[in-house]
Image (cartoon, rainbow, N blue to C red; front, side):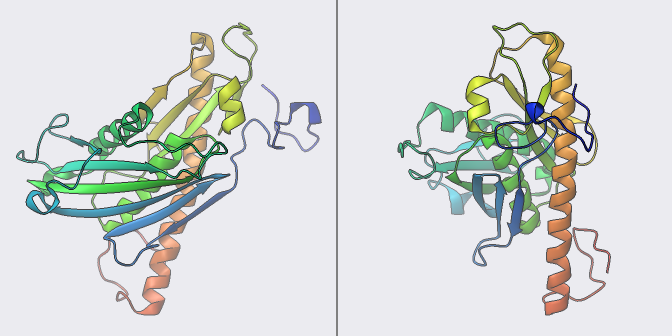
Length: 280
């Protein structure tokens, strides 16, 4: 594995100039839409996602409005809203301008359905949905631009929006992708891991997406859609977990900064109990 030193060989740099353990530029905002219960914008390199949260609301108000969306609940699967925990309804909308080919995807597209189901099941495991029985939490995610690490960006944007909406959760659910410098067919045992793959790297190299809880190494999401040797898997997962810690620190700073601005603007009173830890 290449060493992170001040004198770094140019031969070890990736196509966009990053080292193996560097993230692309991060940018995030919360409360981007005042009319929504919760909203957020997350940008990782050229992958840009916007998320809007509605709820928790009673099932009757949301019934019939979730066409093409995937739902899940902590009580078990995609059950309807009659259980003791809130249902999580996820809808992913891909902008026709988000890719170079400007391909318009239908809501029933297999790839979109897979993303919605993965997001719904992942969030159901970390949200305290038992506090909102017979309710629905709806998330609408809009993909504005795609350049790799799409699932990770969707998870991070959803986490920020849910925090803005005040929905209780165990901890931050943050995700990052990681890959290997050699393809499966090459069978190179000395291949090095790569953090945060862009679109070109995802098309050529095996990769996976890991989601962790907070600053711990507890894995909540693990999605691998590529063929990869078992000997490389551990290094890829460790690299992705390190990326999750860096992203978690950034998201935490965004939330705290928003809380400080709310106090300064008088939106909330200093000392009022909040769902975030703010150092004033």
